[in-house]
Image (cartoon, rainbow, N blue to C red; front, side, top):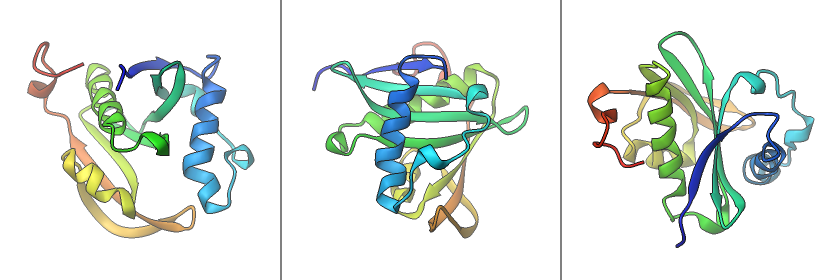
Length: 157
């Protein structure tokens, strides 16, 4: 597989509408919903990361501030035709590094029940009771970012 490039964008980027399309295709359409019917309040304040492969958007995630120590990872989506190619893992690991560089200590997320094994492999821990979001089961998960994990040269970019 050729190189996947992960880059940070914002809502004024020409790539932002393409990330919305991927989020819609992967996260909303299978549930009979459309991201275009949602109010995307606060998106301009979030950190947007996208994965590019052969010039197209193949992955996306958002980091949204919860408080001074905690950021929430949201809207994680990977092109289904490229699943199993470590794009999601690389996006999450890059997001962890960005969060650490921004001074956050914890990352929390609402994981779809089917995605729990993916996040558990990346050392996220389930907390709290199951709940329903967008009509499907989710669990709260958290990871504490250890400073030693993000020292220069110890973490693959």
